[in-house]
Each structure stands twice: as structure tokens, then as C-alpha cells.
Image (cartoon, rainbow, N blue to C red):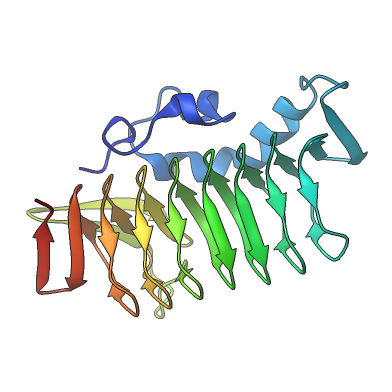
Length: 219
């Protein structure tokens, strides 16, 4: 339930090569920065502006004047970066994705058509195709005791070796407003998270997460 092939459609991101040769999606987190710098140099100059070192923005992307774009960063075609968005760096924003007002991104891959439209924090995470985070929902990327993050799925724990790791959202995941995805959360494809949820561990694909003891499969 937690491999790249089970969670993500790699045809829906400019960063497909970043995942090559890897099994789990969190394995890409250490390589995002270098990947952006390498890929950016190959992007067509007639399609992407290069306003500063390490930053590439598609000509048809919309970036509001009050947004902050930190390097390295790639913003792909049709994306929209709204007022007061804060992209700290090491961020890939996919085609037609939305980074909304007062959202913060750091060391992330947003696949195409992802929406983080209102007051979201997404750090050290991967959000799959058409994943959507409701207003105020966030990824928590460091455990309170600062120990290394473990992905906890039924019957097996996977050591990630990472101190900072937020969440992996499979394609088409919907996260309800004001939810917290705790470090190491993995949500399978087509699953929904109820608003105001506190989520940890692995949520199966095609599920509805109501609370930690009430996770049901969709009809």
C-alpha cells in the first residue's frame, strides 16, 4: 500500500525521473533540491522564465505579486501561486496546481492538478495527481520527540531513516479542512479524510477516514 507504483501516476509530474529506481515515495525527499537544479537547466527557455538562480516559472503560470518564491523551485505550466504564498525552496509545483493564500511549501513535489488552496503547510511531502488539501489542513513533518519517522502499516513498520517527513498523498486524495497529517502518514489513492482529523499511519486506498477506529472502504 505504500510503494510508488501503488500510490502515484508518474505520467502526471515533470519530476517522474526523480522517482526512477526507488521503491517508496519518501525516498525522493533527499534529492528534490539537486533534481530541480539539474532539470531546470534543461527546460525550454521559450516556455519557462528564469527570474533568479534556481527558479524556473512557466510563462503561462500565474504568480501573484505578493507571493514569495525561494530557490530552487520549478513552477510548471498553468499553475497558480496566489497572494502571500510562501515557497521556501526545493519545491516542484505541477501543471495546473494551486498554491493558495498564506500556504507554505518546503521540500515537496506537487503532482499536476494538486490543490493546496488555503492556509496549508506542506513540508517534506509528496502530493499525488489531483490531491486536494482542504482549508487549514497541514502536514506535520517532525515528531515531537524528534526521533526518526517510521511508516506504520498494519503488520509492518518501515524505518525511513528520516527526521523530517510529512505525508504522502496518493492520486485523487481529499483531505478535509483543518486536518493534521502526522509525520509518516501515507494515504492511498482515492481516499477521503474527514475534516478536523488527526491522521497517522497508512490509510488504505479507496477509503473514508472518519477517525482512527472508523476507516471504511468506499462502496
